[in-house]
Image (tube, rainbow, N blue to C red; front, side, top):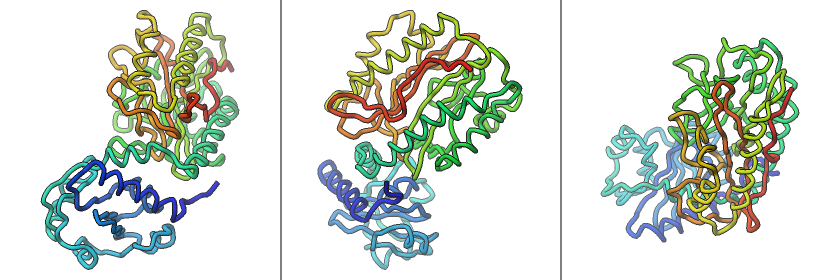
Length: 396
């Protein structure tokens, strides 16, 4: 497993982007990439800089800080230092024409500063094209994701059960999982493309805390440290016998993630009703995974699976109360929330070597959030699990 992308890998990604823009945007002149993760995807380094692509096939990466680190980390040859945007004029004409930019991250302030030195006739979004390219993983990327999945499964199956003890807080557990994860190989952060948000790990909740409403777009809940820091875990909620422990944890190495959820019951036995619900959620995951075949349409998969679920079971399915999500899975890679999404509005066919996390879950009043989540590779035969398949609630 390589730790860094090769020059051939990076230039292949840039060429794919150039070709996709030429195929889908008839009148573009310049593409500008500024978000940190996309910089890394195309250059192999993550700096305060911007990557510029011209329609005629020229690539230039301008770095404010740290230029020396960019030179050390990236195998590309067209990396240039800059103190400000004016320095770009030494390599790039002032007329940028029709510009494709990351409209979700390219701020108004950055745009105004750029306009001091360059002429822009029109702005168009580039995110969809980059997302489509990133959704299909290369052998290099898959080698990392497979290793992440192996470590992730080991963490939740073998390590986390040894950490649980009566009287510990959610924050205690989160800190101890984080320490063990780092020693195991975790890269230390779970990245989300939405608002460029980084979390230390994910959602950890004891009992009904796992149902608590959050702004996070997922089925589970989390009280967090405080209203100002609504993640990590509560210092006040202590683990006691009979508590459910909900662990929806992202994991990753060398920038690439897997996503997985495991549920435990501390100091007690799971009753038969909840066992039955958990078993049904595992069946839903397996059914959905069987449909992760090349050529299948995400919206068709979503609607097919949802049609198989009894109306009574849909209550608190994929959330709790009024706070429910309308998807069954999502792409995973350099971000935990990538394309494609297994949801009603996604119509582009699945392609080989896409990586998708499936997460059927259900809130149980008075108990907490239960269910499963695993990361799968799209193949011609269906989803291949990379994180160990969903399991029953682990009794400890």
